[in-house]
Length: 95
Image 1 (cartoon, rainbow, N blue to C red):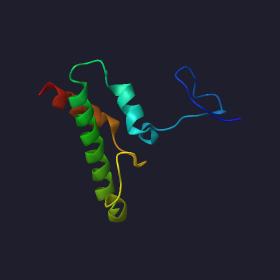
Image 2 (image 1 turned 60 degrees about the vertical axis):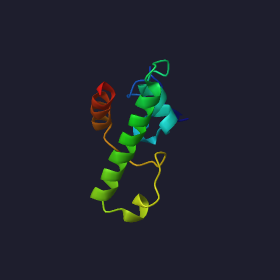
Image 3 (image 1 turned 180 degrees about the vertical axis):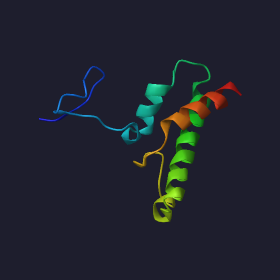
């Protein structure tokens, strides 16, 4: 029986499936990356939202997926580079 990997699971177990971060919902990504008790949390959340949209759009444009580009949302399961999101989020938060 397959199960989704948890924090303590090892990649050597053949019954564990590791899901990519971009399959997580926006709310799940936000919960992982942002401290909701921070007074700047609403601004951080907006910046995170905008960056995820930006990098998903970039991928869709690069792959010439205009039909998807016209209708996708932040929840659409489109791969994006989390490293770019995180580095730009740090820059936006410091402003």
